[in-house]
Amino acid sequence: MKKLLIFVLVLAVAVGVLGYWRGWFNVSREGVQVDAEKFKKDRDDFSKTVSEKAKVVKNKFANLWKKSEGLKGDEKVQAEKELAELEKKHEKLVSQLKELDDAGQDRFESIKQDLSRTLEEVEKKMQDLTNKLEKGKGNDSE
Image 1 (cartoon, rainbow, N blue to C red):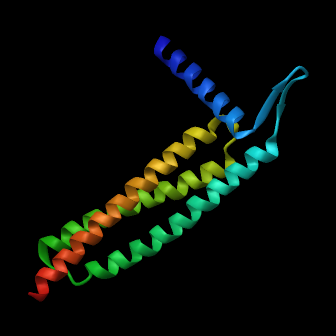
Image 2 (image 1 turned 120 degrees about the horizontal axis):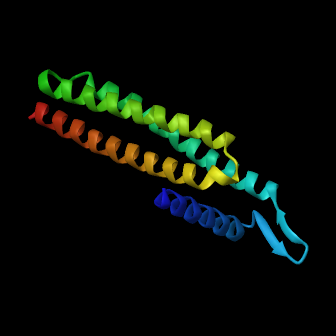
């Protein structure tokens, strides 16, 4: 329980520091003024960027399915397994994007980090699979 309390405290401080640094609120003699528009703009900008990347990922995903159609046997089974795994990660990405749109300042940073990490994983996995499929096709033509 103590570790959970410390984690929540550290997270609250991190969100506070991030919010202050990004200009989401200011501290003055009158108190704390929250700039909801600045936060909304930052959230929308990040959401737009990730949405665009998610569309690119979706297109690459469709191309990978096409490339895997020519495979046979174990290569095909392995590629389909990896593509199914990628599809789950893409669905998670879409779900996180929806979550981001509804997020307040308190959850924005953690969702942003999760989204960035998921997007990185998907892009790396797609690149690895693309390389495997290209190598597989190179072996077929020899």
